[in-house]
Amino acid sequence: MDAIEAASSPQYLSHSSCSQPRHFYVAVDRLQFKMETLIDLLGMAGRRSGLPMVVCCNSRDELDAVCSAVSNLPYISFVSLYSDLAEQERTLVLEKFRQATTKWNQNVNDQLGDDSEIENDKDKSHMIVVTDACLPLLASGESSVSARVLINYELPMKKEIYARRMASCLAADGIVINMVVGGEVVTLKSVEESSSLVIAEMPINICEIL
Image 1: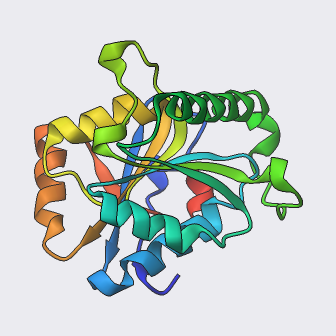
Image 2 (image 1 turned 60 degrees about the horizontal axis):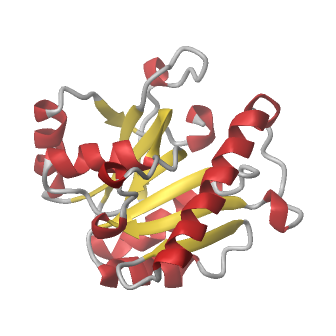
């Protein structure tokens, strides 16, 4: 995982002792390495059978770029949510993902420590790629999709957006991974301080925190 500057943070690694979201960041040297770093992350996390993940982008262009980059990964089943998606399709996407998260929660004890290769479609990780404009609308009665992992491919500029992503996408004991390039460290620190969060460096082996 050459593109990632990461260090182990043992105090955050125990799954059994955590009952609230855990927050991590991955520092990327240069912008051109960012997509490569995401693929590296998914190359480890995505091989966890049935793992439900959400990747958040700030723009439709970045959403399209992410979808293109992950389209050939054989161990991930993904779908995107975008603003001109028909309401019926949107509802179907969210419902299928919620079913995937329910199945993950039912099987989590069996899956912990299981890093076996994906053998068929039903074993693939499930992922939604979404922009902020298309997050589940909690105010309209939609429920959170409760993903195990939320990846902020693009860091939100405001703590309110960070909080909305968590509320809309993340399970109560889920994991947030923030991808940070260069000057975004300042933005991350601002979100951390204003939201009273502790955002640690992600362990080299992401499977330790899943």
